[in-house]
Length: 292
Image 1 (spheres, rainbow, N blue to C red):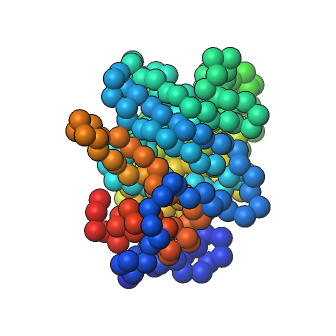
Image 2: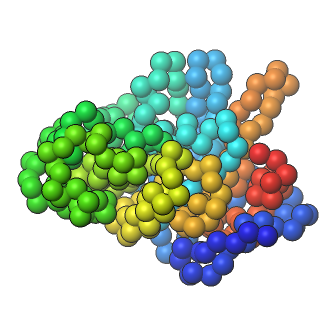
């Protein structure tokens, strides 16, 4: 049995459950961390790439100022769902998104919503660090300029401090961003995202290309950032989800009679509930390693 620590209570979380402990399968459960109102409300979200439906029927809330982790096997639509939250799928030829995603009081899938403005309010950190081929300072200032924020030395310093990077680069701000290590580059990308003062930070497997020490630094940073921002994180690492998240959404793959595969949301719940007492047999099978 593997255990990790509940980010909220510091109590151990079981990462495996006894076989046969789940309830019968049904629609995705919705249990969000107590006291945190939703910042996103997804209703019957579906995504198509051309004629192929990649994700269907995703209905869930994302609580404000908390970390929601999306977990599940490869190809289940975790990253596709994440990219819906700041309209990144608009940039994919042939992609189509249906359903509703309420971001506060507005449906962010509406044609009235400006995707560029939206991405200033909902930042994205990708799987592989992607600093611009500019200096460390220019990387931070670039996003500010695009979003109409006047760059100042104080703002640059604050963003780097918020990303726990300032002490390591304060004497190197004119150096190329690519001179940094992989973990430092990822924290620079996080600093660049938070420099424009977003409400939400989306992270698509932000630690998958990093070593264990850099991964630990990013995880500690995520918990700190959740005090000010809402984080939605795709991770392939269940232990990481148990360590850092407040809520977990488990996605899986269903097949059709025609042989098509489509990602679906099986269950949503608090981190403790998902890892200790999942209500859907598919979640239990994945958590215990019988599938996936």
